[in-house]
Every structure is written in C-alpha cells, then in structure tokens.
Length: 338
Image 1 (cartoon, rainbow, N blue to C red):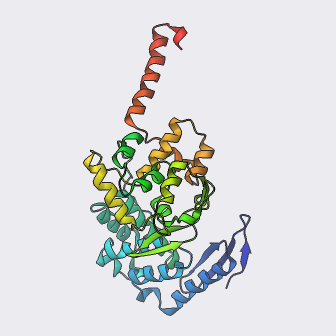
Image 2: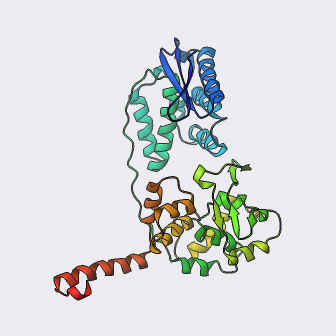
Image 3: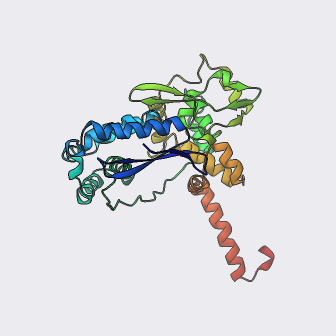
C-alpha cells in the first residue's frame, strides 16, 4: 500500500501498485479518508477476480460502486444509464483484458450513429474512466464526434413574461429569468429561506430515477450564493401555500413550460434557457463579468461567455446597426458621428 501525501493544492494523493494489474494507480481527493477508501476498493476489486474473468459491464458496476460515496446521486444515475441504455450488449460482455483500442473506437462509432455528440462524449468518458481504473496498461486513442455549436433563437424577456403572466408557474419562470436560478435550485427553495429581502441558495432537489433527492450542496461552490429578492417576487412567495416554493417535479415544470413556449413558436426553448436569457440580459445591461458570475453561480468565465453569445435577435440587430453605422460614417468621412 502506498503512502498518502498532501499535494500543493491541499488535496491528498496516494499511489498504489498492483501486481495483478501490472501498474501503479494514483488516487486524489480533498479528504484523506476518501483517498484510502478509493485505494482499498480498487485493490479489492482487482483481487476478487482476475481481469481475464471480468466483463466490461462488471467493471462498470465496480467503478460506480467505488465512486458512489464521492459522486452526486445524479451523476451516479447518469453513469448507470449509459450501460443500460447506450452501450451495446456485445461490448458490455467483452472480457476486460480482451478489449483494445479498435474495439472501443467501433463502439464509439456505433454510438455516434444513434446519439448526439454530447451523449457520445459522456459515454466515452465513462469507458475511459473504467479502462484507466481497471486496465491502465492499455494505451489507446479514439476519435470522438465534434460537438457542433448550435444557434438557438431566443424570444425577448418581455415576451416570455407575458406568456406566463398569471400562470401556475409564473413565479418559477420569474425565478429562472430574473434571478437566473436552476430548476433544481427552485425546487429546493423554502419560504423560510427568504429573509429581509435576501435569499441564500444552499439546497437543491434533484431526481434520481423517479425519486426526489434533497441535497444540501449545490452544483458548485459558487452555486451556494446569497441573492437579493425583488419585492415583486417576495410578494408572490408570500402567497405560496406550503413549505416549499413548488411541489412540482422537474419533469412537470419542463412539460408545463414547453407547452406554452411551443404554442408561441419556440419549440426548442427549455426552462434552463431562462438562465441563459438572464445572462444575456446582464450582458446587454453592461453588468461586469465578475458580478454576473457571482449572481449566476458560474464557476468559470468560459461558461458565462458561451451563454453570453446567446442574445436575442432583436438586440443583435440593434448592435449590428450600431456597428454598421460606425463604419458607414467612416467611409462617408462623417467624423462628427463617430
């Protein structure tokens, strides 16, 4: 068994050598006890049965069990769905030590023919994680389908708010488009979370299968944030019956939202897009990136900037007109208008 060391980042790391696997594997985590547990589970999984007897499907299950204490319930659920609904039976039944890079590439090619690039990337990520854990001696490279940037047309905020005026989910829509909340954050809100015009986001509710799970920790550290509450929203919150802001499941919220936006000509608009609209509005209002990140609970500027590009067509036209006018004035030598 290797020695646990503390890294420069403050996390703990252990390197463990396995004669059966013929390699050394590194485990890293913020908690020392978790590192030890991960190493023990890995060695135990290797000692239980040799790789020549274990199928890829068995290794996936072992991997998920080993990670279940440190992964979120939703991530575990997504991992379980990949072999259940996406990977082929032929690939799942392969003995681990018989798998090579060509077989993995063929499986990815088959997935790419049936699923979106994002889904294929997620499946490839799980395959890679399992192979690195249980068969690290295999070095392979695969080609993944490119994730195409999709342009989505957004309505204006005024349009969205008018569609849901006095509807059963009006408050939820306001929290999404005005406050930039995720569905899981909205579902986790209690009336008692609202104090003196402020709100602390420190709870979410997600579904694992059909079971709602309440989690104290939000998606990222940045997601746990304090927000001011506009009087209009506070008045609506005060009128809610019950402890939680909504009793609706995530699926019910999505379906009710979808019915309305589809009727108004935006069939591809999702409830999560309200969060993107919120980010675009902050861009149009000139809100600094740092504050926008804090308000929206984004951990990196890359996500924020990607969302920023999804502005409304009417506003883009205004910006295009300003840019066109600038250069037209230059060409017309009208410096007084520059």
